[in-house]
View 1 (cartoon, rainbow, N blue to C red):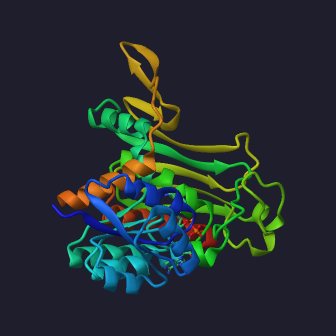
View 2: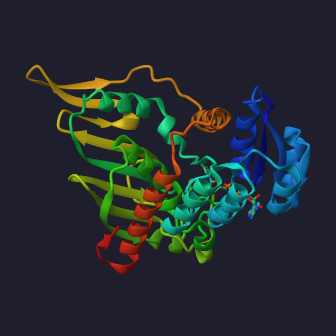
View 3: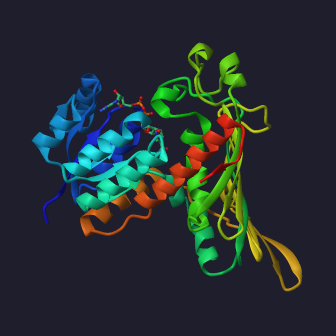
Length: 346
Ligand SMILES: NC(=O)c1ccc[n+]([C@@H]2O[C@H](COP(=O)([O-])OP(=O)(O)OC[C@H]3O[C@@H](n4cnc5c(N)ncnc54)[C@H](O)[C@@H]3O)[C@@H](O)[C@H]2O)c1
């Protein structure tokens, strides 16, 4: 079998840290044939570092000349839709970074184009591959949690406003803590709940700390250019009597430096997922269970590698384009609710 030809779009931080090395780990079935970046110097540097034979400034030129089978997209959120659609129309499978897009409509468009092209579209929501998440998912599937009906999503930092990149720029990223780090935990909770149908959302957001400035634990940022929320706190109601509380913050006067976690509760058991703790009732007693010796895994590698293998085998990926639409419809509703100060139907 010929190797899959991979083109990488975007050669910034995450791409160099994750996309290149993780694609290269699949050299038995795939090869990186080209990279493109509007900043040609970034493309040139990455090509030299990872011994990629071709580099381009424009993604359409790369698609036309190199005819990749698969592209990975790692550019600011604003460009996810355009690059994904262009790549799908050029006949490529696409792994796009999270969040899927800026809006649900964009994610829907991306899903439709993938269907039309008959290609596999996925998003790099790699927290699903954490061993704690997979263990809890297996227990849920085995019926050990009973009926799930509520949970809590936390992606909260004390002072973790990124001091680099576009993360505080609403035009480029679409928002702050919710769309950047919140989507990872929200997706994890939705995955554990089997992606129930959302009905409505309510939220409150703040940009007080971001716009005022102050201590930074992830570099320093310019309060004058801070246009996103530094925190969003909300509630989502789903079909079937399921609800989720959402807490996301780049900056919050809370105890911990950072907390990324999902709590999930059923009538037979509950879990604090990333703590690896399960709470249940057995034989007339309340019991706590722990997942000891959980081995750290490289979630990014598992996510990218399993996607490449799905493309090679024509299989559906764990993270689907449909789920990307639902995720973005919730994100959009939370933002709209916070902006308009009312409950928003989804
Ligand atoms: N999965 C994760 O955990 C994770 C972690 C960090 C970032 N990300 C995502 O990765 C994406 C990129 O983030 P980053 O931190 O690497 O940003 P970055 O600013 O470091 O890099 C972005 C790169 O994209 C290039 N670029 C911009 N527009 C382009 C276009 N139209 N075509 C080609 N290249 C273009 C820029 O020149 C830059 O080199 C974002 O969507 C972000 O949310 C995901």
